[in-house]
Length: 377
Figure 1 (cartoon, rainbow, N blue to C red):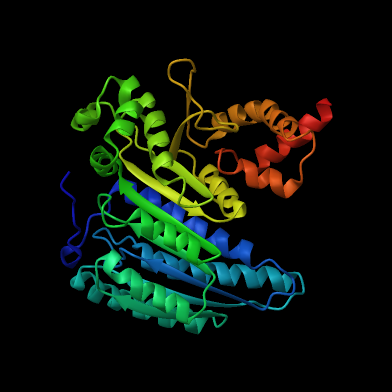
Figure 2: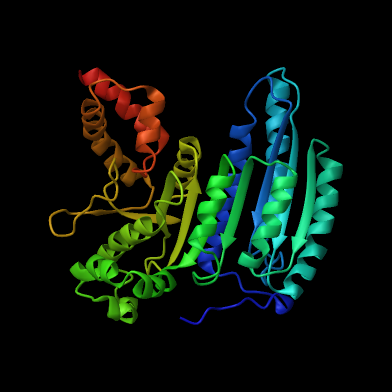
């Protein structure tokens, strides 16, 4: 597959899959900060956000790119957090954020600087509790990563968000993802790629495993090109999720292998990596607040990837109302079964840590199923 590069100098076109990803990213950053600044005694919160493929900042249509979305949502979240704390009689929280913007295209970086500067100045003036420091790099991501890691190390950042919105698949190594998740206790990654590029890599790296994974679709690992006609079929989505999860499951404790939803073909993947169940819980909830932006095919309770096309009838889960009803019905059976397998008693923290890598469910549906299960007993 030929990778498409944006021409930022002439105004890059905002594709629909990027628009959907930006909406999730925008809302997640806001919720992330409100969750991380809840402690009554908290006076300061420090984080770093790294945009590895930052682009020029604005698209042809005028929509904001991810770097400007980060600044806008950080400002909005800090204002909301401190307004709520004032109502509660609590002191304000100072938020310090290092923003690292990298792009291999020099024109894009120079253009980005002209967009960031006025937003950064306005944020510091109108939101004095938000302190932004911006660093720019102009390298391919893998070449920039050592410098990025050095910047994060100098600031001793523990809470780090990486946005890796690449063309294709080859610009970010899995070992780098693994290193990010192991280097920072509260690391999270948003990782976007084109599924056909991943399959082309696996075709060379793991041909026998890929052949077995594609076998039920009537394809061999040499038939990758033929997938174009199958990418809008639900069976393909279920198969692709398992391939994606299998490829990345060792990179982090929590990996969400959900496709950006496009009924014309599930080609673009947005994965969220996290070290803590709470991050995955918030991410699941964000997807339910934005029904149909991402898609899952299989079970909607626990064991979401256990769908077997030879024996099971899977369902398309779009994080909408009908999906939530299905999830809750499955959770009513899945949760007691899980607890019984652990000896009929289970610490709450252990329960959460054990389920959030195997379910697309909303936290409210998990809690409702727990309560109803207890009532049924």
